Length: 95
Image (cartoon, rainbow, N blue to C red; front, side, top):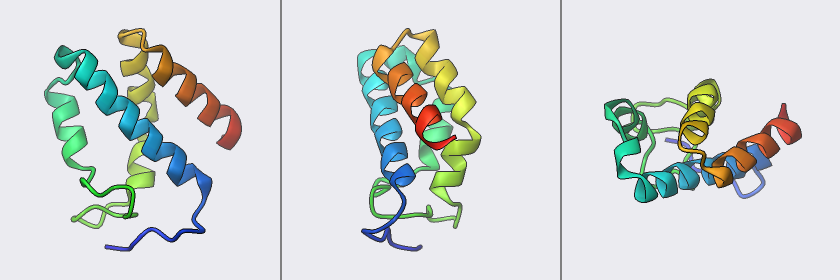
């Protein structure tokens, strides 16, 4: 596992916010954490703020980016404005 460098790209910091916002949604709407999302979140280590890769060597940033459509869909399904606004700002800033 590679540790996160302090001078790493801001996109990693933004995606850690996405993880925190997903967890916030799960707390507010426990039903939203389906089997899919339980498996999804297992791929993200507890110390995701310090690591680029999970225990299996998968790059967390890549994993989140390739699944962003599903994350956006989750936020929209529950009309979770905080998550929608966050993913919209990431799309504008980084894509």
